[in-house]
Length: 275
Ligand code: C2E
Ligand code: CA
Ligand code: CA
Ligand code: CA
Image 1: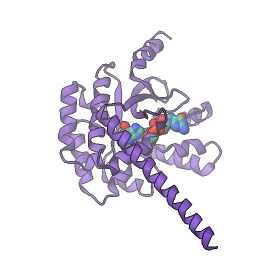
Image 2: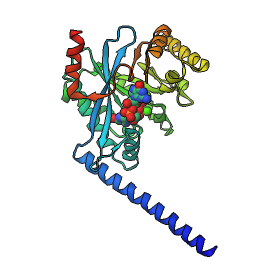
Image 3: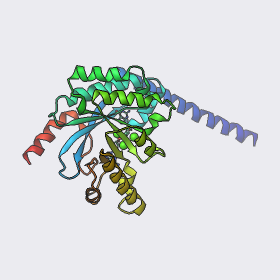
Image 4: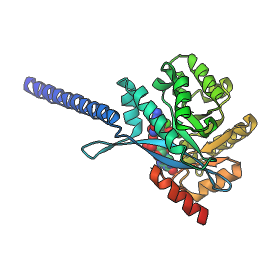
């Protein structure tokens, strides 16, 4: 038994060591990727639910490691937050997305995800203003997407930052609406310009009456508040049909298109113009 225990311990120990090593390697690669701008952005169309005309694109970060494996943005954004790299990465993403959007036709907006560490950082409003000036993008063409996790920090100054952004003329979307527990409170506390309904509701609404009821309520709520409501993760015609009947404003999802490289956008717009 003693022998077994020792072996077991050693196995456990090596396992942990390996995980720690992999984590260090991942962090090293991420630092390098940020320094060398090896993180790229892909853009997913956001379309009008009724006409299917493109209203804008959401910028989504993509990272392929030197060894070939790709790491999901959920994972490397969290890692960047933990390692104190998020301001540098976030500034780069914002600058890049705004510069790209400045080359698009004027009616198209760009949505950029902003994480907790960025919003709390010093001078965020000034940096956004400076980015808009530098890239020449009109403020109303930028929309920042934030989740309620931004307020979990008990840092109440977050509302102040959002107000500052709104004063610049930037749109502010509440992302993943309904996933957390306090989304309604945030809607009461701040005048968001858009609600993005969490994709779990869209996924379940066809087969689950409760989810359908929540979708119905969120669309009605958005209408009462006078804000745009975007359904995310729309994958089927059935979902599109139901969302349209509910009066949902915008949709986003694989049904219309996946995220694509920026270079592809002019071609897509040209194809759509001709068809
Ligand atoms: P999110 O902001 O909720 O972004 C939507 C996610 O849903 C994206 O995943 C998108 O590719 C995916 N998606 C879009 N349509 C469909 C669909 O029809 N079906 C399914 N199953 N998925 C769909 P992605 O790109 O892996 O990003 C995951 C999350 O990582 C994002 O969730 C966002 O929270 C975060 N993220 C991505 N890029 C950035 C960034 O530049 N900055 C920050 N702070 N976070 C980012
Ligand atoms: Ca988002
Ligand atoms: Ca979302
Ligand atoms: Ca998210």
